[in-house]
Amino acid sequence: MKSLPLAHPLLPLNTFSPKLHNRINPNNKPFTFRVFSSSSSSTSEPVRHEYKAGAFDELFLNVFRTKMVEEVGWDSDKPGYEGLIEVANRLVMKNKTNSDTKEAAVRILRSLFPPLLLDLYKLLVSPLAQGRVAAVMVG
Image 1: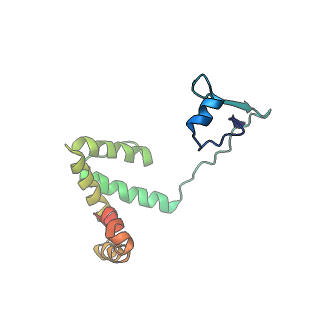
Image 2 (image 1 turned 90 degrees about the vertical axis):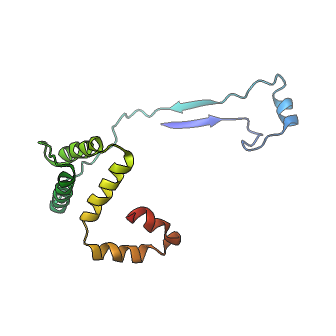
């Protein structure tokens, strides 16, 4: 499907001159634009490829979910990603404020990595943008 906006051919869109505007539009009515489209005869759906989780995806999902369950103290009966989302929703409901939820999320993410790796990450990322990137990402 192609869309073609039509405007006055002699008037650039980023130019405004009151004299020119009054000469082109003497009644001082607002400009109107029309868009015409032509549809192609084929109405094919876009091709969607479904993501297939691999062994590492399942491993990381299970480790992350285990850490979430430890923080929340509750686990969902649903398997996989859907269960993880339920646990995350329970985490949000458990905490009274957004900052409590954020602190819990930071604790969970930090528990996934060894402390030495986090220190190395801070060392490598801290020079970027005067440390703002590291401050946001590590807390």
